[in-house]
Image (cartoon, rainbow, N blue to C red; front, side, top):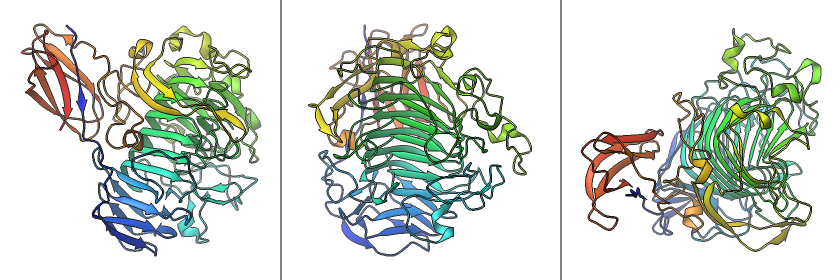
Length: 578
């Protein structure tokens, strides 16, 4: 008999701030401060958390800026922020145009959240921004002014340093909406900007909805990120540069548009765009791993699913790429800001990066007093090749000239790569839908191109996404998830805390419940857990029967398997978020 596992959760009410008092934030935060959920905090300008201060934001707090005013929040080097949202009481940062109940076309309505840290960056040259005395070696002296910030203070608007273990605080269950204030040409705020953030900073469950520029942009540093939800941004959904060396797992990207402007300033460009360093032979160079992403592209006019530039070294494991407009693996080579691309000054060529072991760190411009062993600077990749697609699933990638979807593996500028033909890498091309499903609205013209927004999604895995030959090995951050993409078959982690759920754009109930695994005389109840969430396992004789308590489990972010020999294999079981 089929078992039914149901994840139940409270939905965020539309009246989050119905009884809250308005507090205008008019000056920078120079002493430690707490914002509480009984107030709505209105950012009246670009607000800085200055070095030495800590800003704590209580769960359920609403932070706004009046549409058009352009208020934003920036956390300087040496400062900290604690965004303490929860599944049922997220922290929301948005504009006053957000009704909190319905999606609207818009962006550039306020600023963003920016964090600046003291991690290493590879940023020696840039045709747009002055790099001063920066060098190509990882000395810890390189700094860069954060884009979109207008304060001239070096201490408060620059990122970079010599501490990859830097701690800028923590962020959990945060929804950022309708932002990305345009300061000037090529000087726009991303939804979440992370400059040189260290690995002691904790970031998980972050959402970007509608932004004029990139959704999340990361420059250097080593911060790890988990559970990202990025929708309808005007440029790249996830953008990485300047030697990032952190880990990322579980993300949903849905491409679309935020406003009627050109591609890159309102209409989505690349889903994931990753640069190595500036210049291409500088160190550190981006060397990272991204696991369990579900990426839904704009098949009518979107660009690449994964775009590669300037010696970037990336391993994509167990991801799903569907409805991609151009190549799933797009060789872009240079980013247009003065870097030289793959193969420059003795660095690896594009082709060789795909067949070179992860232990080849390159001696070009490696002179460091910070790391005695170069491997300590690049700890994320632990096997395989420097560039790798492994366990990934491709569903309707690329479009024909007529705009009709065609099935094609995301190829590298028309040429097959080694990752396509190697069976050991377990990549799959399929016409069977890898997730339960999604719906699109009517095709419209934005930025002179066609796009049809995703209006509803059930991102839970099905068909060939339900099995994977090489799940990511658990290491204290990465979770050993036995599925491809960001979601299991039974749990939609968008529930409760995201605008997608709040706006009625996702299905959060159980999907096609798989039977529990048998053990001797009993069953195993399996489900993905989230950090700090308490679950109650319940059982019943039938799907509509009386549910009774079986056990309580506290989630740790892993895929939990609760086995009980006393449970009946003919019963029904569900998991409820307490």
